[in-house]
Length: 166
Image (cartoon, rainbow, N blue to C red; front, side):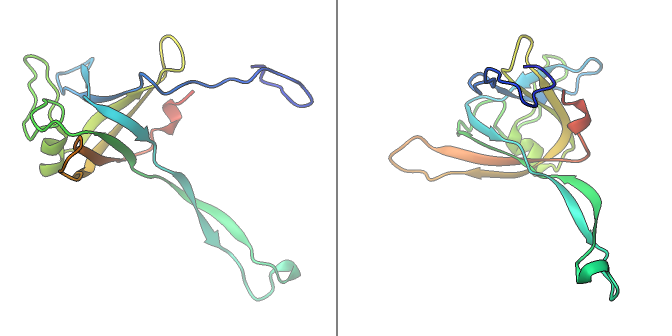
C-alpha cells in the first residue's frame, strides 16, 4: 500500500491471525531462545492509552476545558487457550537452560517472575515479532465439565514495547 493515500484508490491489506504464536523466553543467554506456548486460541493486545491531564482554570478561553496529554501505559495482553495442565508451557514447573525449555505460565504467575515474551505475527515472511518484558498477572482455568476445558491469562508489559513495532 502506498504511504501517501489521500485521494487515492488502493487495494485493501491486512493479515489473518491464524498461525500467530505466543513465545515464552527460555532465559538461556544471548541470543535468547523462545518456545511457543501450546494450545493458544486467541491473543488480544492490551490497550495503548495516554492519560488526559486537566489544565482548566477559572479564566480558560471560551469557558472550555483545557487538557494536556500525560503518561502513556500499556494494558495486559489477554489470551484464551485449551488448558492442558501437564504441557510444559502451561504447567507449574520451571524451564531449563540446558534443553532449552521455557517455564510454564502457572510457574511464572506463582513466582511473580519478570520474563521475556514475544508475539510472532503472521503478517509476512518473516512475521513481525512484538517482543516485550512482562509478568503473568492472571491465569484462570475455565469451567470443568462436559466440554474442552479452556483457560484465560493476562501478561502485563512492564515497560513500553511499542517502539519495536514497524
